[in-house]
Length: 251
Image 1 (cartoon, rainbow, N blue to C red):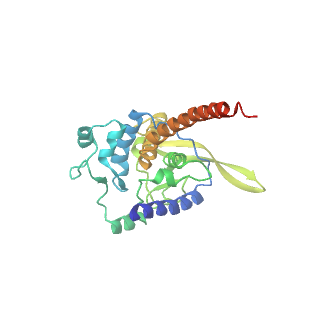
Image 2: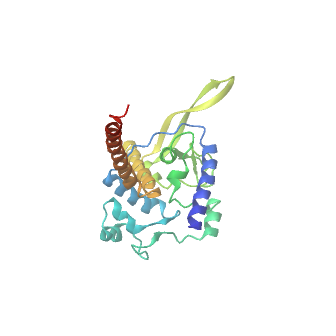
Image 3: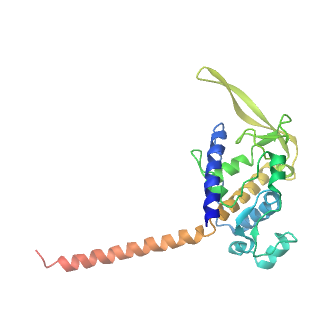
């Protein structure tokens, strides 16, 4: 329990840093696919193949993916590495010292990242959705990549083969007497394996999976809440009629 609390606290601290770096552009709204099992399954596949190499999700077990419609055999065949077991948590074997040397810091755990990144710009899902779609080539950086949502980010663009390589097109505008650069569009330097619309859709699936992973029971919680509210409404009507019947002969 102490480790979980510490992870949440560290995630919230990181979120303030991300928010401070992401004020330059508005966040795009991620499509809501939390009730789409196919989208969540595709997001889980993308997470395991592209995120789980460097980031862990130490408080999420592989067998919890049965909640999004996968069988344990499907999890074993498609989402587990050779040394993993279906009941284990999503941990990685990367040495923290090597990670710090390579990236300048240890990649954060992603179990609750979609909840911790919320800020004035929108939800945590909106931030991640914008972040994963605004990488661009920058040869002045050690990784060769930069990001509009998180300038000077240390993480390279792990999805670049899907999106291709892009460069932002800026437009200079006057604001309060000062010239500022505003993003106008993108120039595609090299094509990716996916079209722009397909890439955005896959990122949306990935982000929705990360939102689901941050609270797997949220669907049950919402459904339970609806039934509780309906019960209270019915109980209110019954109580109101009983009260009227009790006091009708009393003047």
